[in-house]
Length: 220
Image (tube, rainbow, N blue to C red):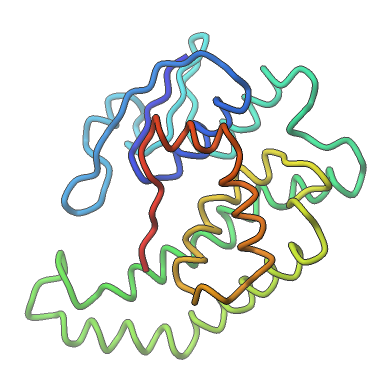
């Protein structure tokens, strides 16, 4: 099994699950370009040129959620990371899809609109870029993000994990956008979400994934 891993990226989710499952794997590391984009070398692995990409038994798999589901269905023989109760299973499916379809696009937009006043935006456009970015955030984006932030916080106020009373692939999938979300909030905000993240970070497999794959630090 080979994981193509871009440092400080969504790929950390897969590395974490591999460690939780105790599976042997080869890690191929890639560094971001100065533009923060993935290097072109990843396009030789998968046409999209993004990470993570997992190679296993002749398969080349992309997209975090799809890879997590593959690992769970193939190697989690005791269904340790997929709940069985009906409501927990419904929550599991929801959060697996919600992470990338609803929450993460907002985090990406926040980064894009908050950085229109710096390279690689040409200098002559940075002033107007900053004005445009600020206007979009104030009039729409920040309010939309607040709705989602409160939604996540309220769920974790009532639940220890995202899907039931035990950790699952839903938590693996939500880890990246939650860290991005918390990077934009004051340390005292969102206590239930921070409690969840502390529980995640205390796991030996998470710590091993950080040791092997590098830190996961998402700035504002």
